[in-house]
Structures are given as C-alpha cells and as structure tokens.
Length: 116
Image 1: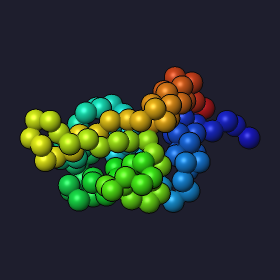
Image 2 (image 1 turned 90 degrees about the vertical axis):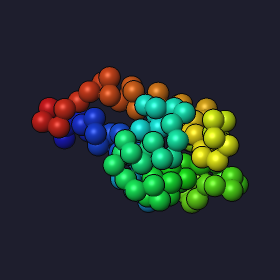
Image 3 (image 1 turned 60 degrees about the vertical axis):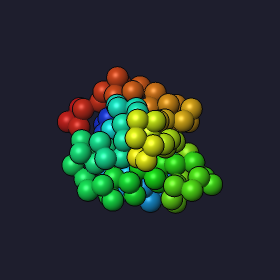
C-alpha cells in the first residue's frame, strides 16, 4: 500500500479534530490560515460562499464557550470585534490553530502526489 497523498493526509488531520467536519468548514479554516485578520464578509468573498455559510463554517472552529462559536467548537479560531467599524468580526488563529496550520504546512512540504 502506498503512503497517503498530501490531500488525504490533510483531510485526515481535520477528521482527527472532528469526524463530522465539513468541506466548507475546512475551506473556511484554510482561508483564515492564509489571511489572519480577515472579516467574515471577506472570508465569504474569497471562499465564494454566502456570508451565512462562511459565518456558520468558521464558527465551528471557535473556542468552546464563546457566544459566537458553534459545535464542534474546535478552538482553532477566535473572532474579535473589528476596531475599524465596531460591528463586524475579524478572525485570528488561536495557539492551537497555529499548531494545526504548522502541521498542514509540514504535510504540504512533504508533498506526496495523488499518483505517486
């Protein structure tokens, strides 16, 4: 049996966080990793999702107990009130989120192709 390709290994990492994680949630997290400080509206735009879908998706990565988080509340992203407008939220990775981002970077650097 050949080793897992890069994409499957990355998906396995997310499934290890929560078995019911969705593709939209993964996409939301990946865009947040690449663009810390973006708003939910900006996330929706770059991820080509509606704002409600982007909000719902990223809230799955919020910390448990936060009023804006929703199950499974993986604790990888925090949302802060945007200081520029006082209403929208900007997204930042938690320490745990930065660890997951680093693990994803390592998986990508290893880079096993699908047809390897």
